[in-house]
Length: 241
Image 1: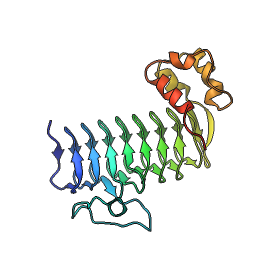
Image 2: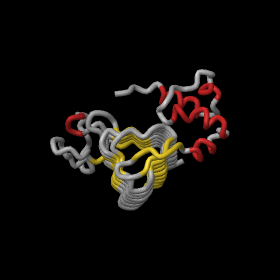
Image 3: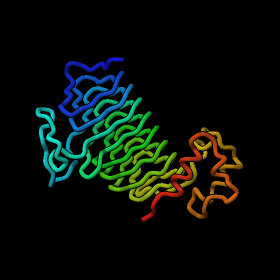
Image 4: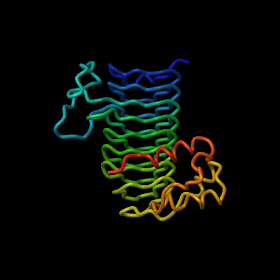
């Protein structure tokens, strides 16, 4: 299906669009950028402008084509498919890696994804959430209204961050973090139950989720439903500082 692009939107050189995207009034997308299929991108969205780094170039990429030099143009933005990106959202291009957004995310009004961030599939980023550069938000995470992420913060899969929380360190998989500074207050049992886990399984995973023990050695991780098994094992195997 064809893309529906409002005539007031600005699509710069070096922007690759898939199919069936909706792009609203006064939105600006500059290259290098690659956007998948079926995204709803609302009014006044800005994608691909330079990362907020005093030492970097700030080219007017909406006027001229990128020259292919990452030191001049940045490392760009890649956005997957079926995302809903509401009005006044901003996504900055990378400085040393591509700023990346996966599939099926919901980015509410006025949220910001900073340079070099990796945002995986099916995340929810509520209104006025601000991420610092280089953050990694794993699949299925939910960031509440007005939450702030310090640079290089990692949010685990299925984690929930409460509204107006200030996150300065890693939030573990399927945990809940609230406050300033944000502290983990429990396990996201609602999120786990929605993924098909019963109370006994959630209890068995509890020590691992709280960082007090490794994964159960009875092969529980292999028996988890859907993509949950893959997420749990990937989180368990991630590199630690």
